Structure formats: structure tokens, C-alpha cells
Length: 166
Ligand code: SF4
Ligand code: SF4
Image (cartoon, rainbow, N blue to C red; front, top):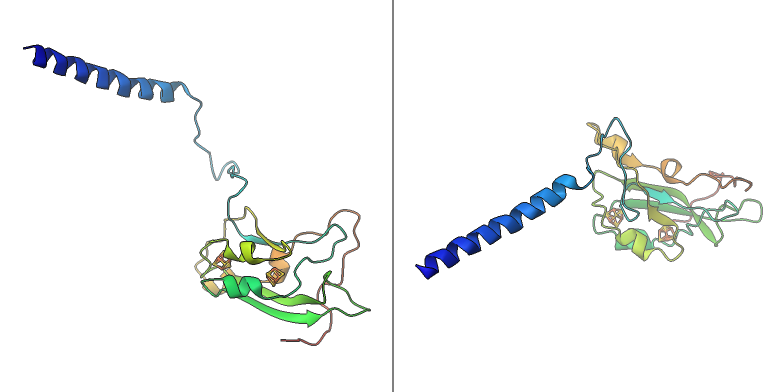
């Protein structure tokens, strides 16, 4: 009989413990987001559509070293490099990415490209609304990925007539 009573008490305690979690959650503020009526909130480290960053003077940070493309397990980054010249300077290094494409029909948002980049040129933004029935629209070009020129900086010439070096 004592065992029976102990069993009933343990069960009651377990139910009380479980219900306490339920009541606590009922009282806490709701976390439901009204997307798409309201913009969703992202954690800072959310991995969305990439952004090709510029430095404070507006130059592109990408120096076309190809390390991101080499690190990409999905092989979805395509780069063509060109040389900066005295007349036309696009990036702070010797070279810049004349072409920089990411194929989002293959990207798995693993972040390896971001980790591999020595100049912090490629980062993840918070863009995520890229679903499409036409996979050709999922190849994002440099023009779509480039960060805007910072206020007060002179915009560099973005697509000069230069000879591809790769
Ligand atoms: S996030 Fe991963 S899969 Fe996507 S481009 Fe970067 S390395 Fe490739
Ligand atoms: S984004 Fe970074 S890693 Fe990729 S080519 Fe440009 S500088 Fe190199």
C-alpha cells in the first residue's frame, strides 16, 4: 500500500511539474510573427543572401582571390578576375571581381565562403525571399550582391572595359 501511495504522489508531482511549464509558457509573450504582413525578425548570424561588401571609401573589398569559390562545397560561386589600373580602381587590392555570381539553386548557406574570405568581402545578409519557379533567376550576379556605396564615398566605376585575367 505505501508503494501505491508513493506512486500516486510521484505521478501527481510529475503532472504538476509538467503543468507548471505549460502555465509559464502561457504567460510569456507570444513569439508568433505575422509574416508576410510584417517583416520577420532575424538573429544577427542568420545566413541569408550574400552581400559583397565595400570599404568606407566605397571600394569593393573583394580582391578576386578565389578562396571563397575554392571553399564552396556546392561549387556555386563563379568569379572572373580583372586587374585594377591607375585609371580605374575598383577594389583595394591588385585585382577585383569583374564577375561574381552565386547560384542559389545550389547554395546550401553553409557559410564556408564567408569563413574563407581573407578580406571580409563576402558576408551573409538577411535576404531570404528568393524562391522561384525559374532556376535561371537564382543565379545572382555581382550587381545584385554588392552593398550600396557608403554615404559620402565616391562610387567607383563598377564595370569598366578591362581585360579578364582569368
Ligand atoms: S554558403 Fe556555402 S554553398 Fe553557399 S556559396 Fe557559400 S560556401 Fe557555397
Ligand atoms: S569574396 Fe573574398 S574570398 Fe572570395 S574572391 Fe573575393 S576576396 Fe577572395
